Length: 196
Ligand SMILES: *[C@@H]1O[C@H](CO)[C@@H](O)[C@H](O)[C@H]1NC(C)=O
Ligand SMILES: *[C@@H]1O[C@H](CO)[C@@H](O)[C@H](O)[C@H]1NC(C)=O
Image (cartoon, rainbow, N blue to C red; front, side, top):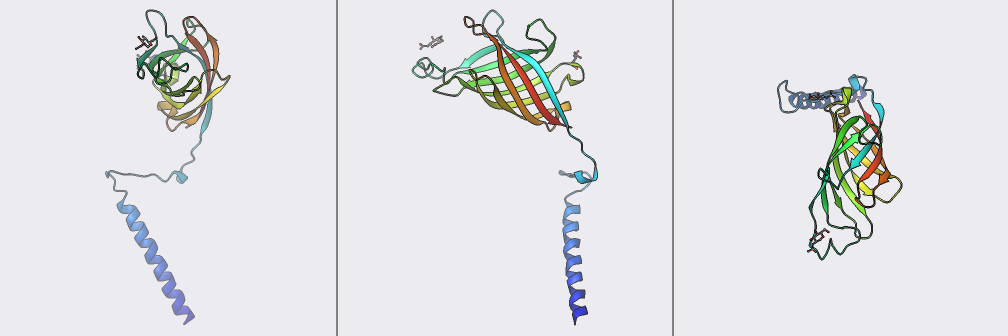
């Protein structure tokens, strides 16, 4: 009797796995819509990269790299000390040193919105598009909060492409200099990113 129970248990178990296997195989047709790889079969090594560069936000002059494209009704944005409601599109050069004339490593392309009523804090959504050496054509996507008068502003890296595929990490921004007349700013950026 015990033997019989054991037998039926094994049969049920076998049947269960046969069904699971059949479902899994059906989901992985060779030219199907969805193909999955079992990552445990391969050693997947992640790297941690630290990128350091300077980011130039030029709002003045004949060739600005940050242009306001929208603001709230005058009664909101113009009356607000924090500029609440303004949206600025950027294509800011990123250079290896703090001088604009130093080597270009990429451009920060995206936008920021002044998203706080009580202080100057931005929602930033941008792609860091690199042009340097083997990173040429690869991007890192940053989405986060930038309270511009804080010493260090940390923003999440939410993804990347090319060499930064599947990236995750964070970016730390520190103001290097700001011209209080023109409001042009140079920001040191340290990006720590895990990728493959
Ligand atoms: C709001 O401020 C902007 C920038 O200073 C200015 O160009 C615009 O004319 C102002 N709008 C109103 C309705 O006051
Ligand atoms: C980066 O790639 C673009 C497009 O492939 C190419 O035109 C450019 O010369 C490259 N720049 C560098 C610095 O390698």
